[in-house]
Length: 156
Image 1 (cartoon, rainbow, N blue to C red):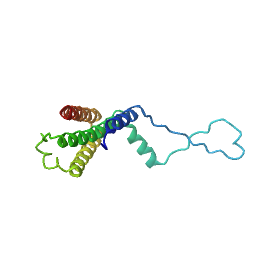
Image 2: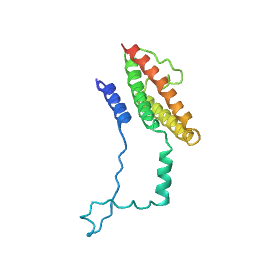
Image 3: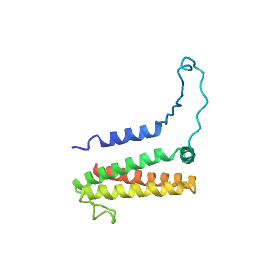
């Protein structure tokens, strides 16, 4: 079975996404005379575009990136569990997905497009209402977690 370690890989990706932190380093510009000195230099001013980008990034709720990672992971698990359940004789219950259920490439493409769409909507929403964007992703993750749990119960 080529997907035997997929759930473990997905779980590892979720753990990495949740517990990873961004690291930033400050670059010091030292001349030859100052290289022996260990006193920190004043930070250089950033170009306006960089400052605006950093300010925009700072407005993203810290919960969104892990929620995006878990949503992607749940979508991967949904494709895996659906494919496995269909191979074992189950029937696709979602009428919108029945046309793609027998074709793993089509199923994966539709799931990828849907996942990207939800993330894009959440990113647009966060610019107007950060709490609503987080709420949307929590709801989407909860729904997908229930779907994946159901699919793996059917596989058993």
